Image: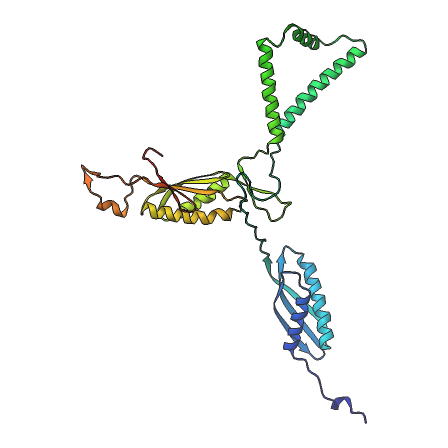
Length: 335
């Protein structure tokens, strides 16, 4: 016995279920780093309309990614619900920037090692190379033209005969010959230095995320960063910073507060800031503070005076390395 279609009952798919299926289908087509923010669905009879809002990573072709998500949401929703999906909307509501990979910290190496592997960034030295090439090409060109002219029966050039006659008349004992030899030796040593030494002494090597990547940080930029951090310490009114390959020197002027407390805070702040520079070899920190004239500290009011002047001068500040060890007092003649 066959039951009529009207008496078999109905199957209804709730809009909430359609929305969940559309969101899951859209998530299957998202690129790495993307996510579904929200979705909506409306069901009328045997058809459904869906809309999905997504967050995509940047940079990415948003139109191509949205097309793939729309096609995936339409086909999967229609296949899993049995409803026709004549229209699907995909909205790109947000873009997210992927966080950069962490920079590996440099491992301490033996003395003299720059830390890490990989060649240093070498100076191109275009000016010395161009000058040497032009001078060599001009000399070789003049000599070649003169030799060709002599081979074809012409007379040698006057400059070449003058050079030969002078070389024949003056020996190594002459002062002019010795001076010329010393000059040629100096120029040769300079050219060898340009060819062998890497140069770029004002740049500090940075730790790179990959062996084929080489990065460097200018010393001036590193000094400016540390100076800004030092000036942010309460009590520091001025600061002078110099950064070398092995050591970073900081001279801070204390305007108010206790110098030893300000110095300890400067050591703490800059000691935490040095690893943030991302250098292959973190330079040792050396901090020196001094009280600026014209400023009074809380303990200055309790110091006895003689003829309007303090009876005993405050001790001169000490040099402190990054680990907090003191090198000893400095005499008052240092700046």
